[in-house]
Amino acid sequence: ASKLPSPDTKVVDVLAARNYKFEPTEFTYTQRDVMLYAVGIGASRRDLNIVYELSPDFQTFPTFAFVCMFNSRSNYEQFIPTFNPMMLVHIGQSVEFFREVPTSATLSITHRVVDIIDKPKGIVLITGSRVKDKESDVPICESETTLFIAGIGGFSKAAGYKSPPSADRLRTALISGKTPEPPPNKTVIQKTSPEQAVLYRLLGSYNPLHIDPEMAAKGNFKAPILHGLCTLGFSSRHLVNEMAGGDARKLKALKVSFSSPVYPGETIQTNMWIDKSNPNRVLFSAKLIERDIIVIANAFAEFSEPPKFSIAKSNL
Image (tube, rainbow, N blue to C red; front, side, top):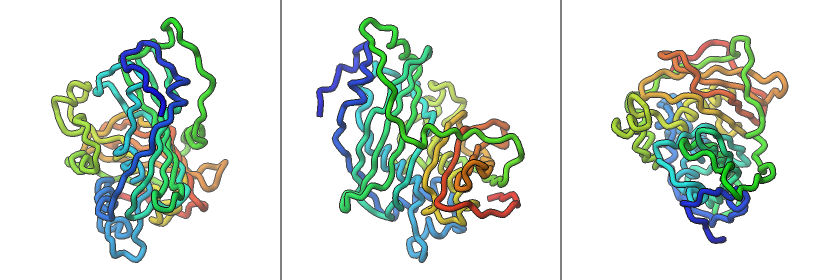
């Protein structure tokens, strides 16, 4: 691996960050972790194939892969100025699945810096992750994570800064998920538990922003917020249940932008539209019933076959 630059440098070398080769990290998990994740994203006894190990169709809900990636993070902070962790916000996520995520495995995960973009009020850090089964060396998925870090922008104005060429992005990350104006083809409504973040953090996401009221206040939130990836998990489950008959193995790609945080106990409404330009793609958004605000936007899911769904609204 190449030498890391000083974290205190004011000049951000975007090209060096992109070219840096991180050593692969490993993440081992069991069926218990897979089932805990399913419960963490709102699954119940109605979802036996993801919460019961003896179900004849037992499977890992594929967005569990994010747990593996985020529990094996690499030291991206070495490439950017020192920042307050409370100023970091997860604003986007995309993923492409090549194979079913195993129900237990040791995964090999290789991270990279995709891009670092200067903004007037901070920076956008885009990272990529490639996930393989360690034993078979078979690729499982590739993902892209977009983070905004407030308070450390302006590096592109520093003396000696050189603008890099366009970044090598994941295909899914570049596709628009803008939802149409007409009413959705399908709507699912589900209330989160007041303890949803308490449960979800047991998967390894221990940021105090999600449990400590004092730390949440420092991040300008009125209370601890739900993990963005937990909100993504809820809506992804709604999509799979309604558009793929509950078979998560049909989910092939996913992209979301997080537009506002959710407070545990609030009710998520996932709205879905079949994409007229691609019969296998479903455009979707998520809104909160209580505050009438959009929390997931510019989002879509791609399936291995055209979705089949009933028109009725679903309340979980």
